[in-house]
Length: 73
Image 1 (tube, rainbow, N blue to C red):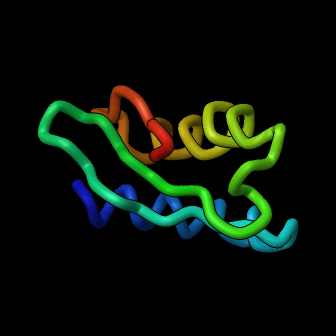
Image 2: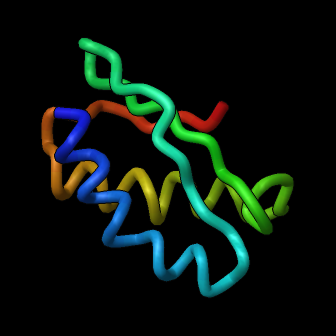
């Protein structure tokens, strides 16, 4: 499942990198929780929570339906 999540992240990485940010996969738990770390300009950005939920989580759930939630560390 970790490989599928990484593939999904690779689809949204160019958008994040265009704004000077990125996302790093930290872990995928057995119960379907994806843990990521926003880096670069995304780290500490006021819009980072929206980016996480409306961008990263939405794409991951589309690509890997067994994922329940994406959380930032």
